Length: 575
Ligand code: ATP
Ligand code: MG
Ligand code: MG
Ligand code: MG
Figure 1 (cartoon, rainbow, N blue to C red):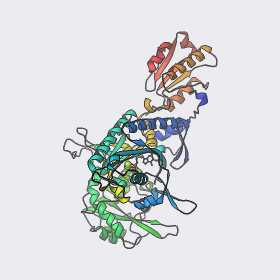
Figure 2: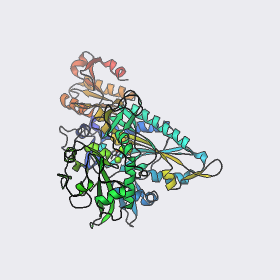
Figure 3: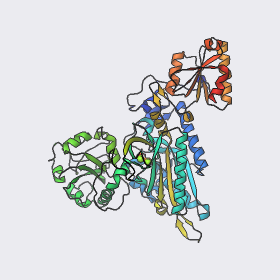
Figure 4: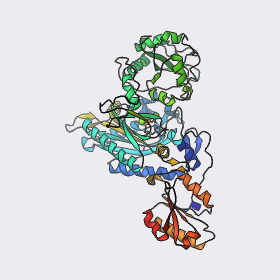
């Protein structure tokens, strides 16, 4: 590729809304361009990286026996009603109507559609196992899109779905995908950790997340450096919460007067005493329609350590609570309650962690309480299936140095960016949608399913978080927009520079290496700054002076200084 025929557009300054280094650098390097909140144009330079990521994913998925298809972005609501997710999913699911007033959704994921395909196409055990995948645009109306492509609303995901005849076979499909993911993330050149994960809204009971290790990560992961134990902190801590989550789900189902329940009502429904050693402040949030009528009440628990009577909380006797929650930082909550906020549950545990050092207001339009003005909590979303209640368990804060659950050492904590997740789903979807096949005895049986996602566009951000320096991005070779850049100096003045530049360009290209010739006629300083910002891993500089001695300069993006190479050595050096 010649730079004059491509599109290079770099910026000196990042826009003010870019908080993390990857977002700043992607904007400055002209990889993406913002169109709206969490919605980006993938500019030519960025698209090349996306295509390379996709290619690696495709190759490894194909090698693992998965079969590519492509399911629509817009999906009829009926399928989502069959599984109940049309109603359950909350505002993250974008619902649209067509001209006839029929409901559709913009897909955030594709379990329903693939299960619909499977129930029509897979009729016999002889057709199993099957694993279908696609690489497709997703839309999730994220509460807080941020960090550029890392938490977009529109983004690209590779999602795969396996269908098996029984639990054992589904376990093999899961292991197969887990292994393929390791190969993919190895080839992407990322430093990552596979961690045990909570199964979340999708359900099922076995899951791992692939977390790219980076300070900017929204997730915290706990691991044991002296054993294989590694888990998302949500899971490590959330186990103790399972019971109270279950109780909250039931309460939600039973809340008699949505929007009107008091702390006592909710506490009674939850079976929570109002004063406990581990204090549970029950918060309710309402979803209102456009006329202000409550359509849904969602119950949240903010579980705090310490001694607080929910009645006192409700009566505003807890100093500073009234009206102050909306903009309270976690530190403020801590000082006001005299206790550490442990969780915002049921699914908020992670979010609290994320905002632990930021403002609660960042999470949403946050108001606390039990349906009295100044005591409300709004703008949060909760809509997942949770296990049956057992007991309200103690809260456990996992901290570094805690013993590892496997007894093989102590825990360490680091931050991660979730770039992929594998789930064993069991028959959750096949049962809801009646996706069955005939087994060897001619008897119908439900298909055992798994689902496997990779955040294609998020990978760009994650890779940059791990690979950057003061001058810009340092792409791993495997996904760099170009692998080599040739920078001729004074090509317009020197025939020799021009001749050698074009000859090297042809030779390198001939090797199948992705090379770019910078024929824009930029001054050396500007040219180098651009390619360092964009993050091209290998640079070859040619000028009159060096060529007189038959030399050019090679510099790897991570190298401190350039190395002189004979012109004849360049191609061999890049191979
Ligand atoms: P998160 O916890 O970050 O919200 P998720 O668990 O909701 O992610 P999954 O449903 O597991 O996401 O989707 C599979 C993959 O899609 C994720 O591992 C992640 O890499 C990617 N992904 C999810 N949400 C987004 C988003 N808003 N923007 C970009 N990529 C995303
Ligand atoms: Mg999510
Ligand atoms: Mg997640
Ligand atoms: Mg996930």
